[in-house]
Amino acid sequence: MGGSSRARVRVKGSLRVGTHWKDLALSVARAARVTPCDLVASLEQRIGEQRIEVARMFKDASCDHMQVMEFIDTIQRLGIAYHFEKEISEALCKIHKTNFCDNIHDLHSVSLYFRLLRQQRYHVSSDVFLKFLDEEGEFEASLSTNEQAMMSLYEAAHLLMPDEEVLEKAINFTKLHLRSRKLELPLIKRVDRPKTKSYLATYERDENCNGLLLDFAKMDFIYLQAIHQAEAQQVSIMIKAPFGGTYFHRSSGYDRLNRTIIKLKNVAKGYLQEAIWANESYVPKLEEHLNVSLITAGYSFLTCASYIGMKELEQKRDHVASTVQCYVVEHGCSEEEACKELTKMVENAWRVINKEIIMETDIIPASLIWPAFNLARFNAFVYEGDDIYTNADKIMKDNINAVLVESV
Image (cartoon, rainbow, N blue to C red; front, side):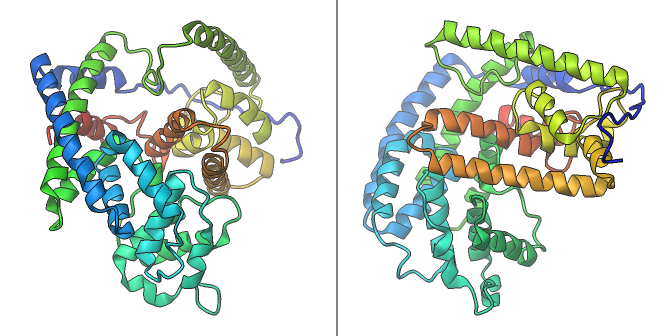
């Protein structure tokens, strides 16, 4: 089966996939409370005033590296780190210049240090975790009793690059011992605004909650929610560009337009090729399929992960063979085996992305890398496990309501 150069499989079915997106967008726009302009202006002023007070907290904690890192972690989770990019950059640069991990044998502290600095694009060696391995090269079993440390290690390990064996072991170790918990996507893969809304409630229940930080974060969430509500109303009027807010800059408009025309031509050629394959009932090899679907999907990371989540739905549609089907036909394996192998490809892609973020600081600026990375985050959010984009009436709807409609 795998040796055929022109494998043919009739992908049958007359299923028309209806989505809830139009109704959902309209209902959210109707339900969203449009915050009056004077209230938005008032919020903006109060945020500016409180920002000064929060910035002062950086100076108060500057002598204690661990306290600074805990503080940075908190404001990142609360979604207000964008107000303090300069302070965060200076603080982590200072910490990076020290030998922080040399005399630290606390797993939580080392994991937090590793994650924050890698997120800041510092090339911190994964060797900092070798001190936690036993004589057999595995993580010491006694570490599993400290849940905070285990969660910190779980989050840190997902910033691994290719061939970092100790971090591979860390992921397996934490998943094994945290299996009683319903582990969410790691922080590095989660979409910002739903993540922020969820953490606001968690932080408010924390006995160590800082009232000033909480008030500032809530105010900022309401302010951004008001802006997003106004945008949601505009989208409901012309609901044609779901990724329009991924990145926008006023300059270089003509250049963007010309490049967009070129890219759209490539997409059109890709659609034509897929139509030919569908008409001929041709199942391409995986590499051949990806060369086309990476273009027609709009961005590369979408393809493998999305078809894993959509596999059952895709196979009911009268459409070109999906990634899963291409792999099954080419390798003569089951769908389950195909999904496992494709999942490995997705995980390897995350490792490559992490490497590009960390290793290409002189070539790719942060202003370019993070919007692209957010597309990968969105894809993980939508397709990790199930296709909540097509079936938007539950999980996706709840998340949109949490971000756009419900107050904090």
